Amino acid sequence: MFDAIRPEEWAREQARQRMFQSVPEVRARAMQQFTDTIRLLAVAVAERAGRPADDFGARVLAGAAIGAALAAIPHEMNGAYERSDFERLDAALKLLQDGLPL
Image (cartoon, rainbow, N blue to C red; front, side, top):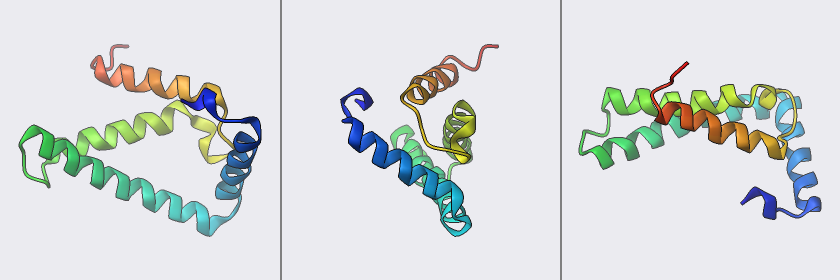
């Protein structure tokens, strides 16, 4: 999917990511969005598993998925994404899927 992005679109996205990292207020809002994303993902996971929307396990799983994404792209908070970052993201999610074998 990301390979289909045209170079000029990719450059624009990288510039947007640099702005996210360089403006403290925008960066703080991005962190709030991670929290919101965990909550939304947890509700979806819980619903799919037939559990209550506030299920603790679903929230932990959602947090683990978001945490894996952040860990897979450690420079995410310092610069723009690179195409190879999405391969690392896939690998991180695969580790979660496999039970985090070390």
